[in-house]
Structure formats: structure tokens, C-alpha cells
Image (cartoon, rainbow, N blue to C red; front, side, top):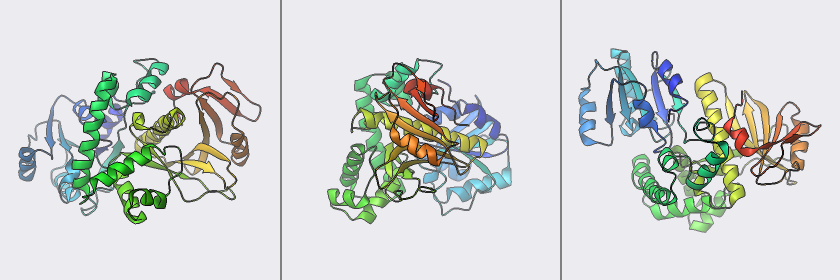
Amino acid sequence: MKRSLLPNIRQDLEQKIILLSGPRQSGKTTLSKMVTEEYEYFNYDYPEHRADLLEMSWDRQKDLVIFDELHKMPKWKSWIKGIYDVEGVPPRYLVTGSANLSTAGKAGDSLAGRYFLYRLHPFDLKEVSSEITPEEALERVLRVGGFPEPFLQNDDTFYRRWKRSHTDTILRQDLLDLESVTDIMSIETLIELLRRRVGSTVSYSSLARDISRDPKTVKQWIQHLETLYVLFPVRPYSHRISRSLRKEPKYYLYDTAQVSSGEGAQIENIVACALLKELHRIEDTQGYSTALHFLRTKEGKEVDFAVVIEDEVRYLIEVKTGDSSFHKSLEYFGGLFPDAVKLQLVKNLTREKTYPMGIQIRRLSDWLAQLQLV
């Protein structure tokens, strides 16, 4: 299945180093090898490949050189900066990693002006809309998630086995490469607690009490899980909102099938992933600044998502499983942001409709399959 970022990456490789990051097994290596048939591939996890990289012995007649997991190399930014500055292109260079390449390996020299960053997410309904119906895609993402291998296998047993191996690799390999962490069992428990709290605000102090650790350690562990693309935060938006909640974030999982706090939370997680993926695409391909937030006041008025583009709230989005009457908080916050599109996305909906104040009730699967924020 062709990935939607491929044409942009091909175009940008002509002038910049491409840094391609994203969750482990989201398809980065496969996508990289689809750029051209003439490439050299090196994975820093393999000892023989590490030796080749230290010698800088690759075929410079090839069109493309792919460096996989290069962020695990000490001072990797300085290393590739030197190659790019001295040798230039061709060949073209594509660096991939299962950690956030904009934050990993900060000890190296800056690559400013020499690269474009892309973030590859798992499949969503939009990316597979040419292959299967929106309803089938939603059912599959609910059941086995959007990571390419289990999504394409479409088998519950395969997904359970894949999930066990996937999580184990992240915690016992990627996390240890990132930080000297020894209490893996407590981090596993932390992930399980967060799976059960998707859609709810998260208190570091409460999590710390549950696993008998201090809040500072818990916050640091969650930041590591963010860097490794296990989960991501959605923080409250407070600008122009009186008595808004300001501190406690919500956390969502990149693997949508792991959410264990009910169908409502799971479809909210699917929408969060789809919105974040689209916002990252907008940032990475068009250069706009974007952010994803939620809205909540101390009186309990709440909307699931506020989409912010270039510092303006463009969309207010509420997610429901089957309620076709509009959520009252959409009307309240819509008054504060009159220019924002006001949407209620409903999984089980018999009829789409709109209201005079501008609120739209849309079928969840159809809207996500056609997602376009700008």
C-alpha cells in the first residue's frame, strides 16, 4: 500500500537530508525503500552495518543511502552533517528512526538548514480509503489498530502476538538505548494504567501513587514514551477561555487497539490519532504551525478537541458513539470561537444534519476518510 508522504519525500530529497521518524513498525523502512530502486541500506542495530558506517564505506554511485536507527549512534547529527557538508549530494540521504529525531541525540551539532523532518504515522481511514470502505477501515482500526503489519493481516490472533513482541522491543531495546532505565515492570504498569485512562485527564501525582514512584520519575518515563512514539499528549487550551483548566493533559496511544477504557474512549483515540497525523502532515509538507488541544472549564464544560493552525482555533470537535443530538458545550465554545468549524462526529449515525448556530453532525467514518484540515 503506497504511503501518502512518498511524493513529498521524493521531491525534498533533491535538496535536503530527510529525517523520517515515527513509531516502531509504522512502515518507515518500507517507505524509504519505495523512494527508488537504487539504494544502499544500513541499520545501526546490526554490528556489520555499524562497522560500515564507521568506515563510511557505502556505494556512492547509488541514488539513495538509507541510515536506519541512526539516532542510536553517539553524536549522529555531527556525523551526518560532516558527510553532507563535505560530500554533498548525490547520493541522497534518508535517516529513519523509531524515536523523535527532532529531540534525540541533542549532543550533536545542529542540522539546521540541512534537513526536512517527516513523521510517519500508522494507517488511518484517510490513507486506506482507496482500498477499503470507511466502515470496514474503522472496524479494523478498532480491532487490530493501524500499524501496517497487523492492519494488513487483519487477524485478531496475529495482532495479539504482534502487540506482545512490539511492546517488548520498545521497552527492552529502544527505551534502554534512550535512557538507563531498569524498572521495566513499573513502566509496563504505567502503560497499562494509561491504556485505562484514555480520554481522561492524567495526574502525575495520582499515577505515582498507583505505582509507588515519585511524580518526577513518572513524568520522565512518560516523556520517554512520547519520544518513542508510544503515546502523545493533548493539553488544555486556555487562551480566551475564562476559568479554563490549564495543567493536566490527556494521553492517547498510537496503537488504537490497545485502548482498554471502552468504545467511547477508543473512537476518541482514533480521532486524536487521525487529527495529529493530519496536523503533522501539514507542518511537515507545508510549514504551518499547528497544535491539538482539548477544551474544559472548571464548571465542567468540555469539547474533546480544538484544532489550532497558525495560532487560530479552526475546528472544535466532539466525538460520540451514537448521540445524534448536539453536545451543548459545542454551542458554548462555538460562541467563544465563532469562526471555528463546529463538528460532532458520531460512530453510529443514521442521518447527518446541521443546526442554525453552525454545528454539524457528521458520520465518523466518512469524515475521517476524507479528512482535510486546510
